[in-house]
Length: 237
Image 1 (cartoon, rainbow, N blue to C red):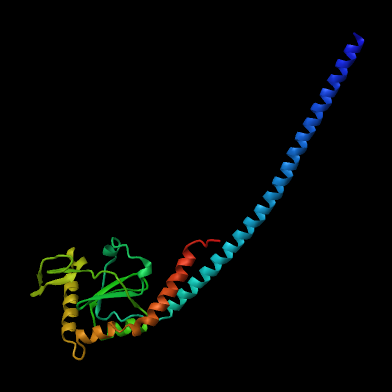
Image 2 (image 1 turned 90 degrees about the vertical axis):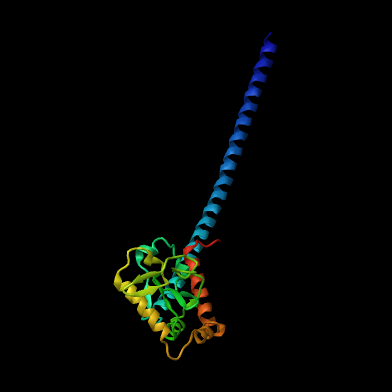
């Protein structure tokens, strides 16, 4: 009986010892895992900090490039708006003029539309002075639609007779209440265009279609737009 009790006591002691060793092994495994995890976490934090620092440096660099491009634009000469009419802000709010359209223009027939550097829209008849000022100010041909309406136009509109003058084509925003002064201004632009002494529509279109004249402007605008995009979009690293 005593021998049997002694054997059981020894086996219990060994079982307890084995269990303690097993618990120690588990504890060592956990401690080793925590150590390796801390090593990985420290490396990850270091890499993340380096990545964020590089991204911040790129953002600063891109923003600096965009600011320099903006200053370059501000130093350019203004366009000649003497023979243009400005679209009202109330009409512009519904047009969603994208700021990448700034510094562009489009022509159709005898009409020209211009989006200036402040995203104002100007409409008028093409003239030599206007075209030359666009060249000097580094404006580029664009795709913005011509905001006119009337007979046989993309946007239909009835003929309008006011102050004894008949208008077949006029700015789209003239649909709303329009002052006699605005109608008179549009009539003045139309009369001026018809009385140009030395330039015809054909002559002006020869200038507009001369791609070499506009290549430098197009290239510079593309470069400035790319700098602006990089400043607005977070860099991918």
